[in-house]
Amino acid sequence: MSIFCFDNVAVTIEAIYFLDPDQRADNEGPERGVRIELHRVDRFPHQGSVYAAQPFVIGTAIWRADFLESVAAGPGSADRMHYHPLMADSEPGSRVFDTAIPADPIGWLSEQLSDLDALLLGKVDHPESFAADASALRNEVPHIAAAAATTLDRVRAGELAQEPASAG
Image (cartoon, rainbow, N blue to C red; front, side, top):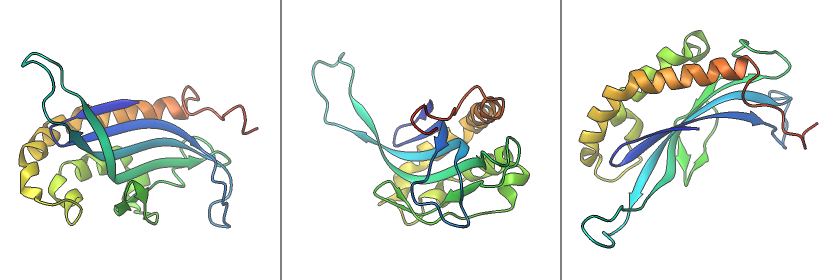
């Protein structure tokens, strides 16, 4: 997992192998790929001396993109890539399929993360307090995109997101 942390938000990137226990006709079989999430960062009142490290938590997920491919279709199929613009208490809303994602997942991700204001719209109180995060995130988008691309390449090469031993 890779984490890019800012003052009030964090972006996580992880390889996943996903077995949906509630298979539907439109979503049969396991999926594997890369999950990218935007989280709140929760901070606590200062503890200890002025020199003490301060704890923080990567908290509630408020946006998610899943660059998934069905195991049956194989690497590069891009057949299940989607995102979740709506999340409540870290639970995703419905999958939204955008044809721009499979066409260029990393370009699409870069565009999304470059507009933190849009990603936060209606999801946080006082979005203006995220201005520094928006600027910092924009500056890190090339690095985040590179990490997501590397993770996706490694999943497709079979290095990451292996079938869990208990799945087969």
